[in-house]
Structure formats: C-alpha cells, structure tokens
Length: 308
Image (cartoon, rainbow, N blue to C red):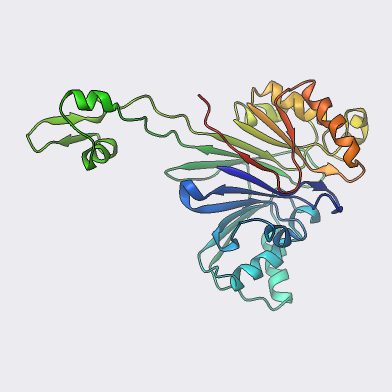
C-alpha cells in the first residue's frame, strides 16, 4: 500500500499545491489504484507520476465542494482514451450521480467502460477477501465523509524448520500447506496447517478524512489507524476561523491522532495563505502534540507499513 499525494492545497490551486486528490496504490495487493477526491487538474497531476488511469477502479469523493471533485469529469473521459475498459465505481455523497450524469451528458462524453455510482451513507461500503472500507459523516458545511480502509489479517508465515524436521523439504507442497487447512501427503500422512503456521500478520488500517471541523466524535472511527490523513487548513492560532468555516487546525488534527492512538499522521489541505517559509512552523505545531506527524506536499509518497 502506497499513498501518492496528487494535490494537497485547500480551496484554490496555487503554484506549489494543487487542490485535493490522493491516490492509494494497491497494485501489489490487488493490481488496482483507488483515488480519494479528484480536484481540478488531477489528471494533469497524474501525468507527473507512474499512475495509469486504467488501473483506477474506485474513486471516493469526500464531499461535493469544487476543490474536491471538479477534476472528475475530465478524468472519467480521459480514462476511455487511455485503454480503460474495466469497471469503475465512484462513491460520493448524495448529488454525486447528478453531477456526473449532467457533466458527461452536457459535454457529449461517452465512456468505454461500465460506471457504477454509489451515494454514501455511514457504515460499511464494501468488503471483499482483502479489504473492508467504511465511511462516517463528518462535520462540515456540506455533507462530508471520512473513509477507513482496513486490510484483512494475513495468514502467518510457514514454520519451515518444523516442516524440515519431519522430512518435508521446500517445494510446491509448502504452497499447498499454506492454502489448505488439511492436506494428505503422498505417504499418507495428514498435515494440519495450524501446526505449521505462525501467528497471523495484522492487516494495515488507513483513515482518510474529508474536510471537517474538529470534533471528538471522530476518535473511534480513526482509532488505531496505522496512518491518519487529516486536513490542516489553518494554523493553531486560527481556531476560531477554522470553526467558523468548518475546518481544522494543525493542532486539532494532531490531538485527534493522539487521542485515537494512531501510528502516523499526515497533514494535507493546506491553505494557500501559508507560504513555503510557514510550513516548518505548521509542522512544529502539530509535532508538539503528536511527534510522528508529516506535512504532505504534492507528489509526496508514503508506504503504509506493517506494524511489528
């Protein structure tokens, strides 16, 4: 799992930061890429990366403000011209279907792939053999959602030395033992997987919150995440302004990370009022509360690591 930040600004694009978009590359896990928000010029940002739009099979829109979705019609159309013929699912608040339908119809765009649009309500969005994704409504001026991506626990490592001790040498048989609870060997012996497997590897958890006013109601939703991505539109001393505009400050995001016992906090959605020289100060504000904090920039990349 790798995070690629395509846009880390707030409200309007600037020379340093485009508006919101985050790609989650799960190519190694399921050979797909998921996109979280799609602000204006996201497809242009993608050109500066190795991301192939045809690999994007799910897009999650946190809310319907323009800096989070104005890039969507263009990306959907371009995907047709770039070899995209596999199904694509879009998740977003009520109104996302109307926005997409009108945009495509008015522009005469015709997609070459099946498109499914699912409008959000809090709870589990979907679950398969490898991932479970849930969402929760946040506190913003319009309906805005956070997403929690939970990877299912993986089966433990084979105890190779123990297998060798009973005369089972490396080969295709190891794969069979790991994939089946019980197998019978050619000599008639019955092998039970549970006797030769280590403890399961705990799946990774990633939480991505859309624009939100700071609130303790989000603690249980992001609790124990390996990575929390949170907006930090304002600096600490602008808490009153942040509350007025339904946004969060650097320190409010850091406090949530601390209260939720997350492993790493990544700040994004930085107001264009802050210049390059302001960034160390913004980061320091958050790190004073939650030391393992990073401030994302456009094209920043982060691996979501397994915890030991």
